[in-house]
Length: 324
Ligand SMILES: [Zn+2]
Image (cartoon, rainbow, N blue to C red; front, side, top):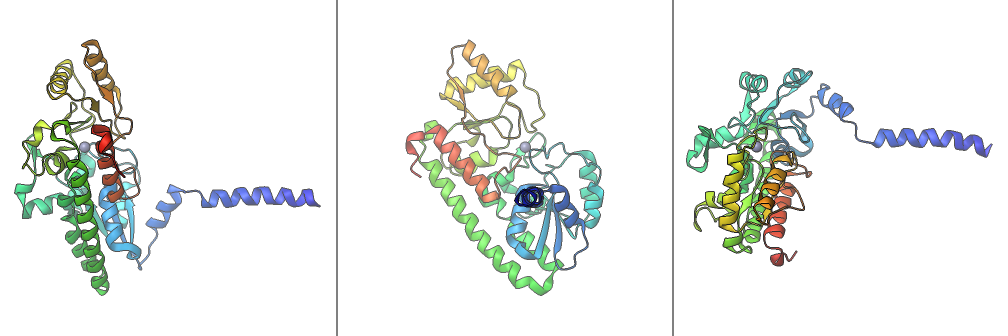
């Protein structure tokens, strides 16, 4: 009889385990269901989704289109994506041409999308950095700049759900305060690194805004371009050539750079090529022990992502200043 009970318990436990394990497919099914109680938001990136979740809380159900380690620069629509657009009550995108995969870009433009970066740029174009005949889309790397998205999201949610306008405004206000504290924390962390050690070398050009805001104190301490270098250009799918390697070795030697930072969603092949070339020329250079998050969030929130990045940069560039 006891044996019989055990036979029942094992499948029951495994059934419970499977039910509690995350299941992306069933989560998507739930998001696709008609539910008039929540605003269904489709966000292109995790960073955008994170802000919407903070402001909307229990009133929103957010789905991220470009999740995990997928590249937002080149993402193209896959089967089922058009249904997500049809289901969404609100679509939020980073904008500034980050999502430039043709099929996605066309659909975003045809839909009533809230392009955060473009809307902020309409108000304050002087805050954005040029890049490759366009605008650098990685503006989430400057917390003070990305936080300008908050009022836009509050307004969009209020329009969809006027009955709870006050709630969205309150949570938006609280989030702005949190982001302001985060911005301050990162500035303090970077200020502990001596200026002559504040050189950030990463795989692709995602950290220009970070360098401007945090490495040179908005330009007060010099030109941020001298403190940031990325051999692969704006998009992670770029290829590195011999000339790029020579440029980077020149930068490394000139500024006594000791570490290059890998990014979580990008192959380390290019960085390894650089390390090898440096080794051949007798230049001492190593890879960071921990990856940075650039185009994919990794952590569970935008705040944790930026906290992680600044922590890793401080620990790698000037370990003795680490006191947390
Ligand atoms: Zn990027």
